[in-house]
Figure: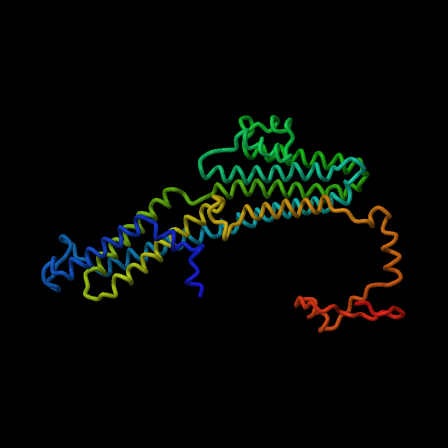
Length: 358
């Protein structure tokens, strides 16, 4: 029953719009006046002014409005998906860098991998902050940098270095990502990593920088205000004209039918507004940016800080165990189904010369 799930739909938002109730009131006024005889005898040729209300005129306006509205929703949805993909690609590029840097750059008391990730993560967080601030016609201030200092994403001296009054959003991104690359390059050189591997690892940060710049560009490439204003005018005039036309009839089913049509039309317009501003923090149901960032930071922390006993002994004990009892990957369909289905029953695997373990 998808129709009844209104918690995160545009329906409640449309019902609190003033224009919805004004247009519905205009239609009900015309319907009541026509059926009460205020306009004279029904079918007596009453018209609004000198111009006849022709259905062909309504159809033309409705088709024009539908085409313009569908085009705008399609463009906004494409940009909406693009923004979501860029955010995830940026996070994935940081994952890739951290994954490989942990292998090559974790020197004794010289965590180049953590330092490089800290600069990359700080740059991503500031890019997302910049985009969200742009919806309110503001930019990042020094206080925003100080919040990152409190969280230790940025050091106090680095906050002064990244002064928002001297660096634009793109400049700050370039500087921070170049610093991350510089740090990683020094660590790779000190670890005597092969040049080809160095290029591959640094390419992760270059990709991260490119995704962040694309994210800034795509976030600012909204529908032109002129188009949005013209579309809103067309929607209001068409729905008002439609309300007057269908109000001049005898059927009592017309008012609820018009209210439903009005809800759908204004719902599409509200959807357009929502798709146009995915970073405003009001659409967490479909664009959960806060949740994405929270999980991203949690996953990255686990990747950078995990510790396995085998690394301290060069995996000697694990290698002996594997040599003595090599893993058997071939499984039966029943075993695979038991694993994938989440069955609580333990699987018993008899190994030659060993007792069965439960």
